[in-house]
Length: 207
Image 1 (cartoon, rainbow, N blue to C red):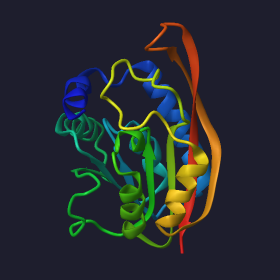
Image 2 (image 1 turned 90 degrees about the horizontal axis):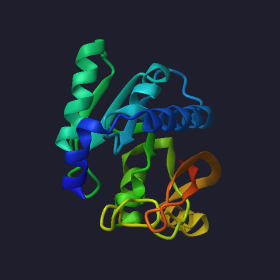
Image 3 (image 1 turned 120 degrees about the horizontal axis):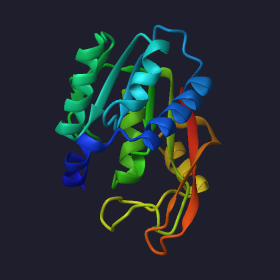
């Protein structure tokens, strides 16, 4: 999986992904209602498409990813635009959290289905949030493996919302809610026919 993202980094920012990031980031901002001073983590930031959409609404964003080349693309954008409040950082769930700040909010777009241990991710996010901190996670509804163009890219073929809510409740989150964030139309990897894939936005709060 890591090789896939390393190779894809240079061509990642296509018009469809950029438009999807704008839609999802808008849903996240509306759900979180930031005041402009928060410290936010964007988990699985990639080239920073969501982080850069959110940056004007918060004080600081730690944009984390496991792909050095994805982060390199984000670093180039930050330098070119003189952005001061987005900090790229190589990190992923399971890594040392000792150097991490505690966050007012955590956002993540289309990344959770690439994480093998979903419960560990939920518990890690919970541990990194300040009391009252919130998450906004956009990801695929359960599908039958047609979304990705080849096997082995994803750890999960989307998520059943009820099951995912149970995992985040087990991790200690409260006020767990879902809404539809976006729809992606793309060819099925099995049939080649165009089909719609829905993306949910999960929000929840740490007490």
